[in-house]
Length: 399
Image 1 (tube, helix red, strand yellow):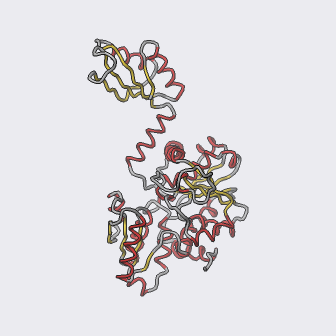
Image 2 (image 1 turned 90 degrees about the vertical axis):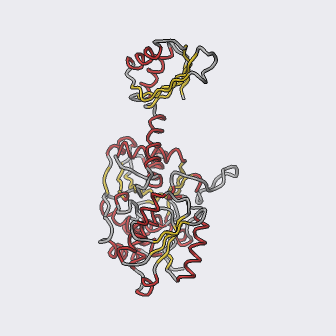
Image 3 (image 1 turned 180 degrees about the vertical axis):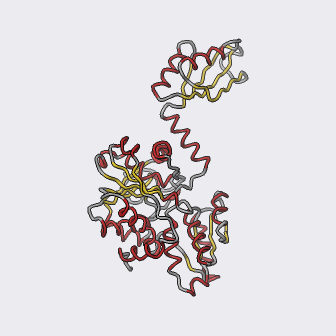
């Protein structure tokens, strides 16, 4: 098996730099102050397809021979890789077919189709879609563009680290999310050559922690995750061979920690990130003792998060922090009580967002009503003050 080299990545950098954005590398003072770590963010969510995946696709397609270009390309993906292949095939005038599982959100399908690719939406999951792609490959003789287990793709992803190390001050750590391993392996090769003192740390989510040693009672790998770009059961063989001797350690984060990191990036850095794009920050928050006082490079690897998921992540974060207070109470069904409750909330400085008041299912008496109130508070301590004020007169439950 041919090994990936720094010369491969350097050549890829020269080859694709006019077709992709040199994404900004910026310090984030808000996160640095909060974490006691000097944080530098590389904003790959600003690429044309809002993901670093564009880099690998651009390099792979640029290396195709005239014969291969004439045959066309095929890829299997439900997300960012699909858009990267479609865009750069369009730019190079190459016919592209993308096989996407049939349950892929329509927005992702349309974003891929807009680049001119033919979409085949078949298969229940990635595995079934891959089998369909193999049949098309055999029938039409297209060139497969693998999302990670390909040296040209790995080299393209590694151009991320060249830019990061050139644009940031000397880094103690680069923390990277792990999916199939293309970004991780390419970046590790670059760091070894350009900044050998910089250690590479990988991050996996609990349900896809193929590089971690879990105890026997841990849950099986797989399942749904907010970090869709990391939902890969096993690293590519070429990626694993490349990165194993260069990886400092692997840190594991939970679904909730990734979700919280999405909200933190939005609030503290004003950056919209998908789950996988926030996973590196989730690890730095969780394992703060490793990074305290260090200079750390973090990629925001992509920003393709659905509006609904993003909104829910923000609201759930507000609720966890106590800035959204949800109270349920049984009240006597008589005039004036709603006004009294609203007055108490107002005098405590709370802002009523939503009220639900109904009698039919109230317990325990027909003379009772059930009231649910969603209240905005400044912080957790303020929420406690509001709750205490109401509890002086009403029996309530916090949800």
